[in-house]
Each structure stands twice: as C-alpha cells, then as structure tokens.
Length: 86
Image (cartoon, rainbow, N blue to C red):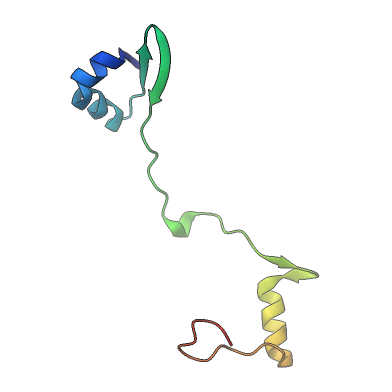
C-alpha cells in the first residue's frame, strides 16, 4: 500500500492513479490522519458467469409455474411487439 498526503496527491495525481490502475492501493492522509483509500475497481465479470437468482413461487420455481400454466392454457404468450404484456 502506498501512502501520501493530500497535497502530494494533488501535485502528483497522475503518478498515484497510474499506480492504482496497476493494482496498488493508495492511502491518503490529511493533517496526519488517514482520510481515504484509493483502490482499483475490480474487473467486471461477464454476465454469463454471474450467478442467477431463481424466482420462486409457492410450490416451485417461477419458470416451472409458467410452463405448467401454458400447458393448462391459463398463461398466454404475449402478443408480438407488446413489450411482454398480454
């Protein structure tokens, strides 16, 4: 972890942000007290790798309820171009 004063950060901001971009953490002090940590942003994980929360309804998963409802004729497919609303 790199450390700097607020004044030094202002004078050499590019150098400190370059270090953060490379993965370093910079702790900023003002009047001898730590006031901030500048940390790198974690790389975004592709959407297809993120866990998906499953919606549940009484008795099972929402997807199963929709499939069952369609089979019984109680849930209709939305009309094309309706934005998903029946």
